[in-house]
Image: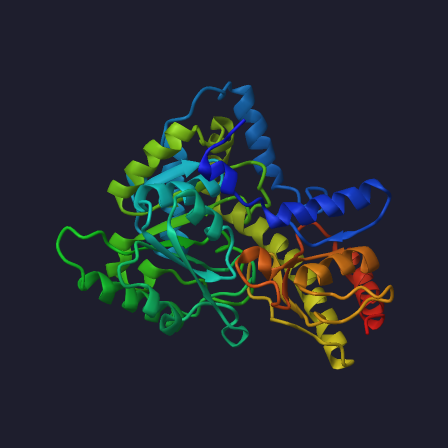
Length: 417
């Protein structure tokens, strides 16, 4: 049986491949610190108690039919208030679209703006833009970033690729690195985008920024910035992706929201509707009620963020200790999200069994087997296989799991020649 050209050329998720290896080893009895998935172990990080009660109550109220195509009005109004209060962004409810998490919003942004052959620019590493580019038959340009800039793209790196481009996909705090834009970095990028749009002729498609700020409420002593807040003229050219999945450990609750120019959001609403990718109505009703109580949200976030930061710091300190002992490792100080960027520079080394570690995937699978520690190489996020940097996600591990893992990593690396 033949399938479409698109289906036959799809590349599966590299993260899922690693996860399958981890799950198979767990099935055989191995105890593995799983730092692969951008998710939370709900026994370690449960959703807020009040939100859970609100969801149950919404089902008792029979909120089980189709939600409105753009989302329950009470939630869109609450999101509008939240954006004004926390980010000083003024978006009315008709400029807000609710969906089942962020993925439908990202895909709908691509489908609403990108025609086959249009150019989409994004940094490498970044999450899934290569796959969405492929799904929309875009001409994708992955701009490789550097450690000295915390793997955030600069205006100078992006500018040569933006002439005639349709979409620039950005994220801060960034998945997979957990690093963030400074105001100056993002201002310079906005100025380049505005300059490019001013150079285009009447009737020519504009260059848009898709700004994924799903982790904007999970920052550690750093100020989150966004294009419209820094350059109000960017309002016509920015589509935001946001939601509750990460800031409330509510990935399975599936409530995300996007916002931007009303005419684009309206087209995205139709696309999400055709996909049927709405957030469940009961969850939307409960989320509206939960976010209305700012003190309640802040109380949860204070405790939640501290717990995440403790785990990130333990991992960061552990790799710095190895570095100070002479191991070929490094780490970037955590800034936001649930990720730490780690360098494990052992490509080209040989295992005790004589196996050559040819690339970052080999290093990763060696650590899975030998140290019971699973990471994700940056090659899963658009970088080359010979790049020795990895993403570590702390959402599915306890603080003790991380502390127990570090001696195993040290022992495993000590065996390499």
